Image (tube, rainbow, N blue to C red; front, side, top):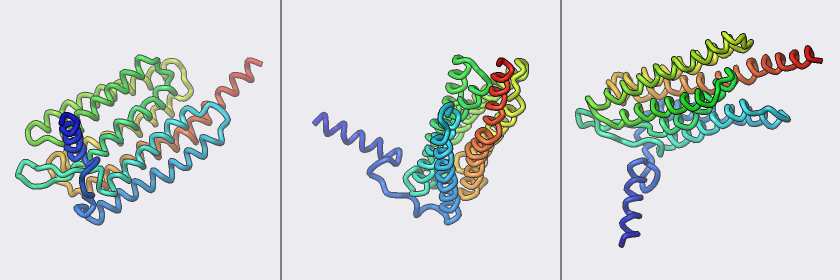
Amino acid sequence: PEIDRLQALAGEMGYMWGISNTESLQSEYEPATKHFLLIGFLSMFCCAIVFAVYCFKKADKRQQENMIFLATAASAMFYYLMWSGFGVMQKKDSEGGERLVFWARYLDRFLTGPLLLYSLAELGQADFPEILMLVAVDFFMTAACGIGSTELHPWKWIWWTIGMAFFVILAIQVFGIVNTAKSAGNPLAPSLNILALLLLLSWAVYDTVWVLGEEGLGAMSVSLEVGFIVLADIVSKIAYGLYLIFVVLPQKEEGSAEEETSLV
């Protein structure tokens, strides 16, 4: 009996999160929503393959490339989950109507955010406590917004405000790493500043869409909300990764080669 009760409880929890014992909600999507999610999946999937090939071509020092590959591969999985209708759940709004909450979006950010932040912090030569703090703040920021997306007025706005407080702390930390790199004469400092802006501006889009979309005021259609999120993801993962791998890392390797030559 105890085992049966635990299995029933696990099934209920799985149903709540759209993991098991539930039907696809893809039929609830507007055509544009499905198209945007498919664009997100294909973009991440194709770029993950490109980054993977580039990783295997390098004999060593593939840490940055690995981070970007993992971020795009994970994002591709979650976009497929949302496109297929299983990375989403229906919740009641304040007026009693149905609204869609894409919980897979927040799980995506839980996994990919730390990877992107680590790649930035490592280039800025941040120490372990700084990196740990970055990851922890990102985790709390995403958790607050994720919890708020499931709540009703006025509680959801409290959670969003908490998430924004963590976002401000995160931005201060990121630019602190960039400024430290500038003060230390790190030749990658200008490129670090561009990478930081790519991340933070695109993440600011997440929070703005939260306010205007289904989670917040409901002033934006689901299709438009998903479209903006896909665009922000493309900037924060694909554009960030392409700039990092094909612009920043070659600069770093050239600088290392010049140092070795001068030592000789």
